Length: 169
Picture 1: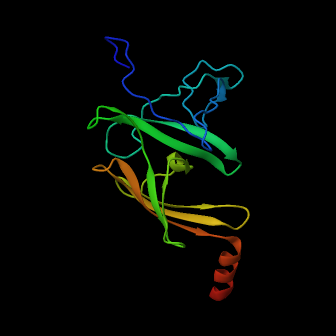
Picture 2: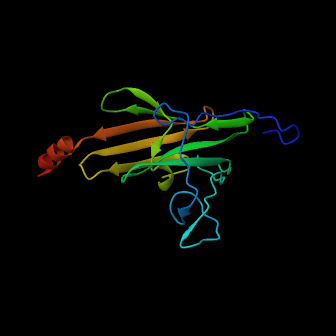
Picture 3: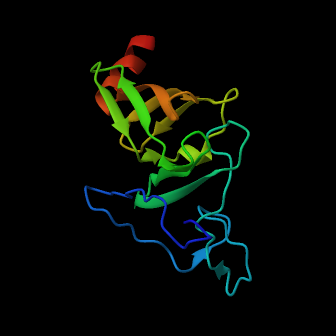
């Protein structure tokens, strides 16, 4: 928003399942997904939805996130922020090549991304495991020139994990 004229400079679609809408919490417990600056009543408070932080690792606190709790596996995370180069708000995409299929997918929602610490500046390497035995290994970096995250993922189902365990015996 241009504060001088009151004009909207740009908008970013926040699509979930093809629908450009997202339910946001009015009250939430402190210590979970969104920042809850207080005051708290009964352990809950109003979330600070546009709390700016450095989520891409470039040293600038210009990004914010939206969360969607799809299941007990944890929240899907969408990263948005201000691009100094473009002078606008952008949606950060995750371009990941699936090592199982070789296909590249541009994803805008990433499971539990903001709960992972980078292994080095702008580089994340972690694994999400599920009770079903499925696991997804991620290895990606933030690429400033393209203003997106790029890397690989390896999605392994329970049967494959079981075969690999049996081979190790």
